[in-house]
Amino acid sequence: MAMIPCPDCGQEVSDKAKKCIHCGKILIEEIIPKKFCAECGQEIPSETQECPFCGCPVEPEKVENTTIAKVSDKITKHKKPIIIITVIIIIAIIASLIVNFTGSLLNEDEQLAYQNAVEMKSMMKDPDSFKLYDEMFLLKHYDENGENDFTYTIFKYGGANGYGAITTDEAIFKDGEFIMNYADEADEDDANYVDQLFAKVHIAGYMLTGDDDTMKMIDIDIEKIKNKMGLE
Image 1 (tube, rainbow, N blue to C red):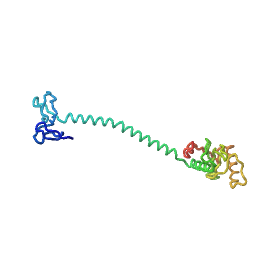
Image 2: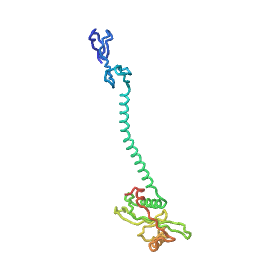
Image 3: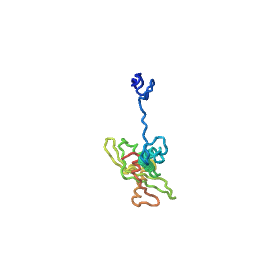
Image 4: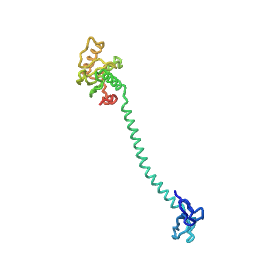
């Protein structure tokens, strides 16, 4: 903002002033928008509500309201795709969470297999090298009353030994306790010697006869166990 001399009286006034405060000289003329009758096209006063030339009613708000409506309509049209995309993204996220959550749920048999696999991993010299291979099942043993009295978990696994070499074996658990590796012989000095002998007999018997009143095999979805353990 600056001070300028009035063109009439020469005294200083603001360059923003509409008229000189000293002599009243109009410095900035207000531009009044012209208004025309929509019917006859004659220029009419801006405040009139009826054309003095043809009598056509004048609707001052019509143009403005139409413009606002068009702008509002454009905003609404732009909003709709954004809302639809947002809803789709939210639905996809919710669906993904549901799939991941339900996929990670284990039934009772899978939970037993999972716990035994975790226990086997903790027994490795290098737990980070632990791998599960595509062979895992339960052998459920039933007593004379048809009740499940104990369950073997059998799975093939691998990992690095004390020398760094990768070895594979097949673990046998009875309920939640490691009994032996399938390839090993029963060890008389082992506290689980009796269980080892029975495990060999039970597994061999099942291999010969298959499911019967005393033994039943349950396949385990090993991918669920791997996912739960964070294995590839």
